[in-house]
Length: 389
Image 1 (tube, rainbow, N blue to C red):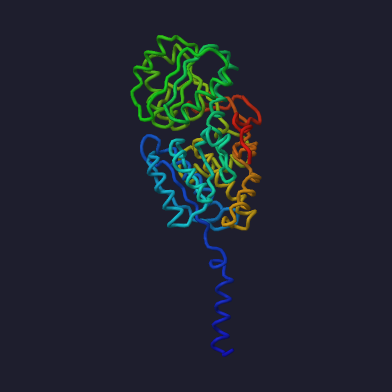
Image 2 (tube, rainbow, N blue to C red):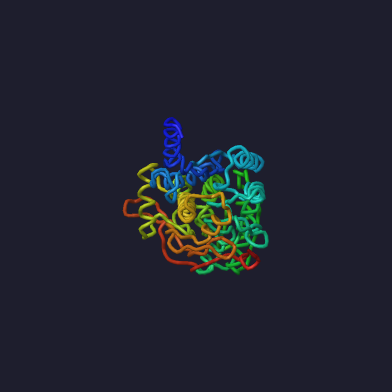
């Protein structure tokens, strides 16, 4: 070999051995809702996910990552188009970010059919949890029903017997009411499915008043929840009929928007900013430092999603191409969740604890969600028994 050839070969070997060549960034496609009344939900998921990447110096599990984010605008067709472009043009195998179950219903099957991996930071529709479960589909947040089963159990623990229930007319809304009723076991004085874009609830307020329940359960995330809570208080119903909800109906953003009207409302959640564990203390402090706002539970889920992916990347040496190996590593859930106890059940949905929270004034006079006790322990979901992986 000539001297020139030897130098070229040595240069090529050095280039191939360099970190940049040895491991190109793992592309992660994030399809989420960043605009409209539910825009802050996706923003919190995105910001917390990116925070986890930033805290590891642009990596997850030691592997450099590139997070590519696009807004589905709560449009299933738009989410589907983004996913197709991510997979075909960007050659992305690992996707996350979807907030709403109607978008997930349009997008997730395509991802799985193309041998991709989807890790949900929020939506957990029932139809993907049972017979339609998939070895490459993971939900870090919760299965939709369980989120509201916690509210049903909380209402039952508080001694309520007759409930009026409301939720938007889409998959998550149907799962919400099914979950609440499953654990509440009391009488249902009325059941209403609202529109997903509804902002005027005057007719529903009149029906609640006429039914005269002893508690109201409602699931309205994001801007819908702000509108519902304000109108409920303005109608004078909050003073007469208490409300028991799960965290999407009263997160820290909704609480700030409605103010004193939310005082005394009972909430259930798998996470709260006051949880006393090392992982959560670090997360809350770093999130507030970075973004100058209190994280919602959506943010906690975005952060946990990043940590779960980090654990899998660490186990696979930063590789996603071997989808079976990556999914096997994901299923171990080898990370410290900010919510405390966490593992994946047989359908790769969470098994974790649920807590009772209440809106109270703190020492500073400001309203806050305060953790009061445990509602359900190591709780999985109703559909796991039907999943055969």
